[in-house]
Structure formats: C-alpha cells, structure tokens
Length: 305
Image 1 (cartoon, rainbow, N blue to C red):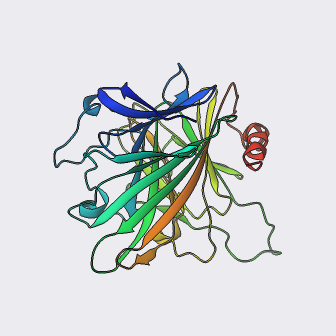
Image 2: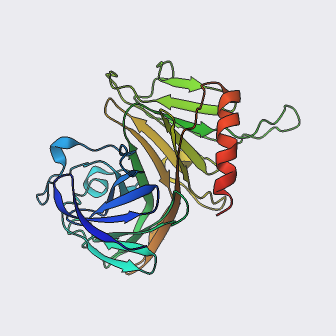
Image 3: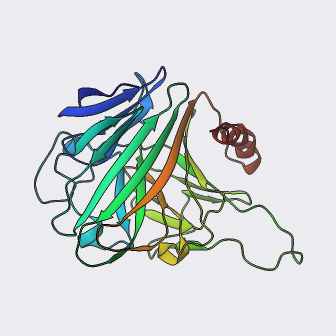
C-alpha cells in the first residue's frame, strides 16, 4: 500500500491511499485530518466546506470537513484549538502516520495512524493524544467523522429484554439543551434510533448514548458507511457516560465516538481506535425490520477482521 502525495481541493500536498475500489485522502498542510473517504471517481462520503478548502495558517478555528480528532469534555478554548499547521507524516509499513505540532495553547499533540485494507473497503484508524505539559491533564479522545449531507445515521438499541425478567437499565440516552425529540428528523424505533440530515433544517439536533454494541451506520442513498468503536465497561465516559454522539445541522451530520476519561501525566499518551467500512448498492429501508435485514449481513463482514 503506497502513499501518494497529491493535490486535492485547493491543497497542493495531500496524502492518498487507494485500493481497487476506495481511496482515503489525508491533508498534509493542515491537520491531522482525513478530508476524503469514498469510492474512486465517486462522491466524498465526508463533507467538505468549499469556503475553507485549501486554506492554511491563521489563529481561527476552521472545520474544513472530513474526519478530525478532538478532546472531550467540550471546552471551546481546548477542544476547538485550530489545526491549521502542517503535519509531519511518514509511511509505516502498510499504513500512514500523521502528527501535528504540539499545540501552543494546550500542550497537547495529536496524531493519526491509518491503514487501508488492500482487499476490502476497510480503514483502521488509531487516534493518539499526548500530554506535553509539565502537569497532568484529564481528557477523553473524541473522534468526529463529519458526513456529507443527504443521509441518516442509524444507531442500534440494546437487545430487547422483557420485564420483569430484567429490571436494570441498559443504556443512558443523553440529550442536549437544543435537542427536540419531536423534530421530524428523528425516528425512535424499538431496535434502532435514526437521525436524518436535512439541508433545510433551521436548528441543530444532537444526542449521545452508551453504545455497548459498538457501531453506528450512515446511509446516504444506496451507500453505507459503518463505523465500529470500542466499549469498555470499566471506563468512565464523558457527557453523562457517552461513548458515541451524533450531531446534525443543515450542512452535515457527525458520527462521533469517544474514549474513556483518563488523566495523562506529562509525556503520557492515550489512544482510541475506530474501524471504517463502506459499501454501495445497498438498499436500507426505514423500518426496524428493513434495517435489520440490510445491516446484519454487513455487520457480519466487519466481524471477520
């Protein structure tokens, strides 16, 4: 798997990995950020903000689009630290490593390592956060994949357990101050929660959950992007116990996963892993039964890794 240096969307230096079907493009002039994942010659599954493409430098935070690494819990000064500087990069075996400079305002350094499977549309991503301060820092790694408009995210519910055989709760569902559960973008099913992106929407929506099943899928047309992420029963997750969160506005929908809270001593690091998968030609209906029929075979493929 060779890493190519290519121009992309206004930047002159981006890093491309490709197999027979899909490509991954990572920015080298800003980041660390995966700006594109999609079928060769097809649309980008990730959103791009045209007014920010190709920009570098400066002190303002830019979202750019794509996939990024943040720090939870969300504090504007620390979480939204600009990633507008070039990254160091190197090909490592069959993978790619990109590392940002140490952030001047936070003493934190972020890096990504990515592997694209040569035979399958599967990307393995390891996010790393390192504390370069001379004091400990408590945080959780937060991986945000910002999807292109027009789709819907599907989040699995815990398996049904009848009352009174099972009396204890199985999942916290976390809402934000602007969450409106009556908004038509939601569909609250018995097996799945769905949140649809709407380019005409006036207000954002967000929810989080403790997802022990460790996956969420974004369906856009007949393409399915599925993300797998870990669940650790011993971890203390941020935001009232969320290891996944989902946010949408009129431009995009975010599929986010979070690691547990850790206290990093000076020089220590924490990692957070995700696995991405992409299929096309898949018809996913709206009902729980239709989703089950379409997604179950795809999940079976991810378990073979």
